[in-house]
Length: 79
Image 1 (cartoon, rainbow, N blue to C red):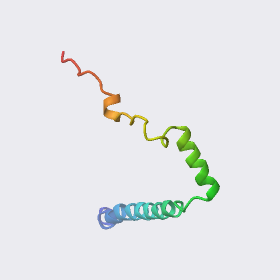
Image 2: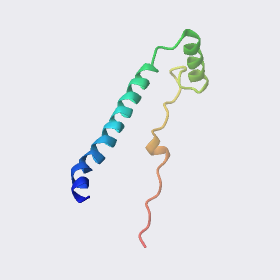
Image 3: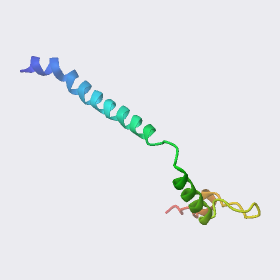
């Protein structure tokens, strides 16, 4: 029995890794296919949403604060 296990243990590692690689490659191909150009009605809806959120607007608006400045926390005190 030990000889059988010592012969086939590489397959126990290689087969799951190969299956994971196939799933990963298939997921990448599916995500590339879903990035097709938007239709005109979807594009205008996205533009309207961006304008309503204030991402697009007049040039006199103040720029957004960086995330690090907005979430700065006081230093922790050592005990």
